[in-house]
Length: 210
Image 1 (spheres, rainbow, N blue to C red):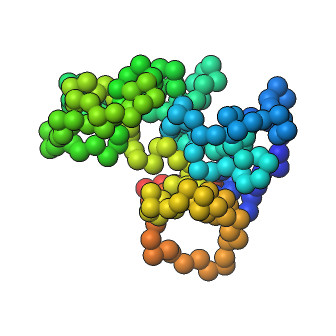
Image 2 (cartoon, helix red, strand yellow):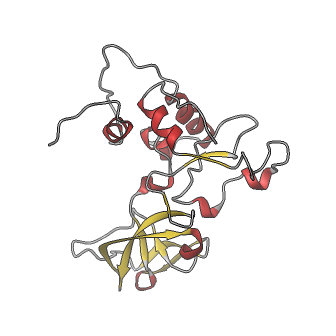
C-alpha cells in the first residue's frame, strides 16, 4: 500500500507510519469482511490498539500499532514483557508474539511491587491462555512493561483514558490527528508524558542533544 503522508500535525505523521491494514493486495475487501474480522481480539493485546480505528466502512480493518509493538523478522507483531523469576520482577525485557504469549502466565503492569522488587500480593491478576485469572505470584513468568502498552500513540495522549467510554476515546484519538498547529502554542494543563516523545519521533521539532 502506498499513500501520501498525512502531515496535518506531528501526531498524524507518526500515526500514519504506524498504520496496520487488512485491505489491499492479498487482503480483505470492505464488502467481504464480517464482524469477526473487525472485532477486537485477545491477540491484539500490546500489539494492535483496541481503540484507534476509523469510523465507517473501514472500522476494524484499519488499525494502529500499539506504543511498544514491533514486527519480528517473520512479520509477526511482538510486544515487550519484563521477566519474573520466583515472584521477583527483573529488568530483563523479552518481546513475545501472540503465539508465544499464550504459553506463559503474565501479570499486569500495575501489579504491586515491594521495595525488594518482588510481587507484593499473594494472588496476582494475570493472563494465561487468553484468559484473565488470579494466580499465585510464584506462577507468574512475565509482567507487562507499562499500562499504556495496550494502546496506540494517539490513544496514549488522552489523559485519564481508563475513565473514558471506548467510543468517545476512539473519536478523541481520531480528532487529535486533525488538530491544526497554532502560531503561539500553549502548554496543556494536563498531559500524559507522551507529548514530547511524539514531537521528537515525528521529526518535526529540532532538539539539541542533552
